[in-house]
Length: 129
Image: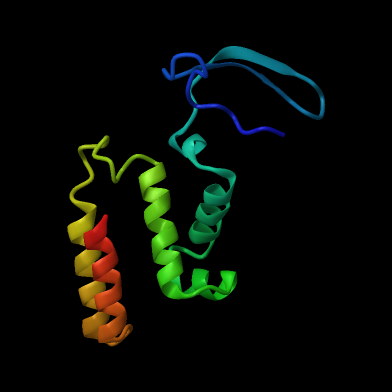
């Protein structure tokens, strides 16, 4: 089944879903339904968010389950944040993510979760963005 589109393919404006049908009994509901912010996510990122939420936001557990390094999960999470539009400044209620991310790296360094080298690498990648 295809993912719901969130933008008009012709003009890129928002769309409204007007019909929903049950796959079992074929009951149809007609009205105006607005897609959620999560419809913006690629299938891969939606699966990542489901895993992240199921594991209660525990990045270490997500890394363990997906069998990837902690830094990969952090980068993937940054990608999800950008895909949702938060990193681009389209949502004014979200403060500077870069500063918050940098502080998070420093907090992890201070607590001994990561080495100085890992912290320097992560901070370097953030400053390149």
